[in-house]
Image 1 (cartoon, rainbow, N blue to C red):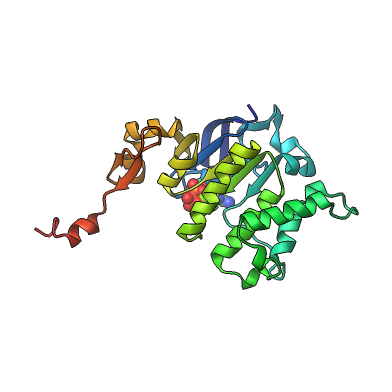
Image 2: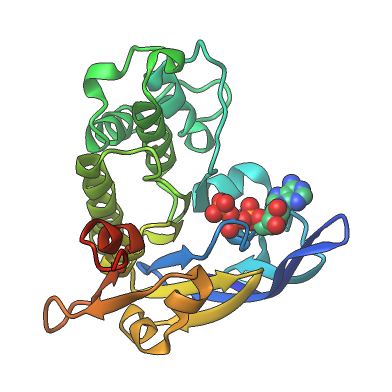
Length: 269
Ligand SMILES: Nc1ncnc2c1ncn2[C@@H]1O[C@H](COP(=O)(O)OP(=O)(O)OP(=O)(O)O)[C@@H](O)[C@H]1O
Ligand SMILES: [Mg+2]
């Protein structure tokens, strides 16, 4: 076990946003966090990143509370991509990605050949080599999101926390980033916790999945087992069917769209 949360509880001004959250993350594991808007996913990630002081329970890395680990040391262990990151508008893509390596570079030391190679790899892996010198303010929403993902992976931490990393990406880049997450876990042994709204993408890439509802974990387990619970339909207030797609793959959730039936005249009659 690498990262563990036990009975983690976070309150904002007396309101509970995350209640008794448990999670254990193994080396090389991909964990998806799913749940409706406001269910506590970002709160859980912030607490795991040591950015929120829990009102109960704790998050530990190798047994040490994350909020007690000095920032530079923590940054070598854990990279965190917030849902809405901010940086100075004038900063270029390459500058942002270089900043991702701050924990590896001494204050006065220049970047080593290793650092430069990692920065190049991070830019290339996110399709940003051609945009490296562009200021962030001149990028599209999806390009900017890829720049932040690039900075997070350039950090080369063994734990990667990603808060909806694909929310602004077109379908092609969504697939590339999901594939990148998978490769990082399998080829480099990186452990990843990712909040993500696309249930099928989450199921396709993760080893384990946590479903949050109103701050509470209502499922924690193998994605294949989630299909049996009926929780997706109740928690997200949708109707749909889990459809098998391959013998060893988790099934695909096919959501029932009322307007599709209306268009087909099913509801009109
Ligand atoms: N800084 C804050 N101050 C007060 N309440 C907050 C704050 N951040 C989040 N909340 C509240 O805590 C709850 C959980 O929010 P959180 O951002 O963790 O949800 P989420 O699952 O990430 O949602 P989304 O899918 O919309 O990103 C919500 O009710 C939200 O309104
Ligand atoms: Mg969120």
